[in-house]
Image 1: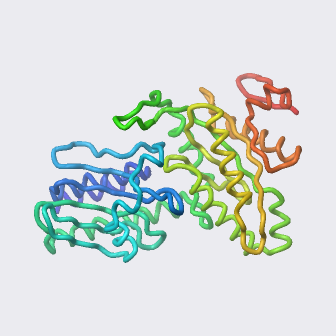
Image 2 (image 1 turned 90 degrees about the vertical axis):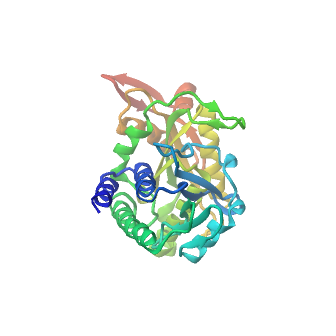
Image 3 (image 1 turned 90 degrees about the horizontal axis):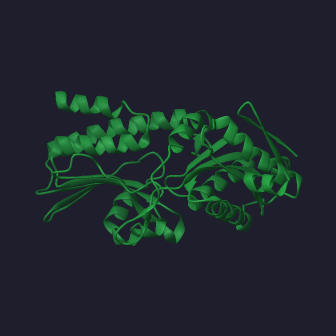
Length: 340
């Protein structure tokens, strides 16, 4: 019992979701000694949804492994490769399959979108006592996830909220090693950090003409489009009203610009119920050494303001605007001052 209590204490000692999933896998691995145990989550949208490994630990291993947060989506296994996982999530209940090895699957999310599954392989089917132990640990895990959601996520869209931005900014901007390639030639990791600000064009007109309920639906649908465009490791925030922020890693400004342009066109081409066509203005900047959250945000916000003043429905790089002379950047005492 003391081992269980120790693991539960460790499980609730983290506010980082990646550490939480790794700790859950490590705890159940220590308590049950399976052949391997893993958490898989669905990422992507529509027909291109994939299985992303959040944490996996096999017998004999000491530290859980996971897919890189910025992994190429096309390198991940398609949903169709693992139909049993899909059945588990669709039914929202555990599945046990006899065989060598025996397979146990349990859904992780029960109160919201059910898109993550715990998968455990063992020499023999798990007994009733072992299943009760897993159930107890998962209840603690789910309750703690709910507390994190309440404190860190926007209640309407489910994106991260503004008060989590500073902490996430510092984590996201820690330099990573240069990109490498695995045995299949897929790029893994690396890339500089980039910050983008996304602002819905004429959103006040949507609320005035259609009401705030329809406006909220637009915000909710737009957040879902953002999740479909960006990757598992990209940090998506709603800053309030019609303003959204993206923190991500890309190799260079051209790659970052393509990602934001993909979002802009996806939104422009989407048919929003009752509203029709919605467009967004986007500004982005590289995160520089020594940047604070406010200094990086200010540069991206200046680029958005320029787009708003010159026609809307475009993507603008702060660096390119300065290089063209559309913005003039002065550095005073280490702070950036941008003038039109």
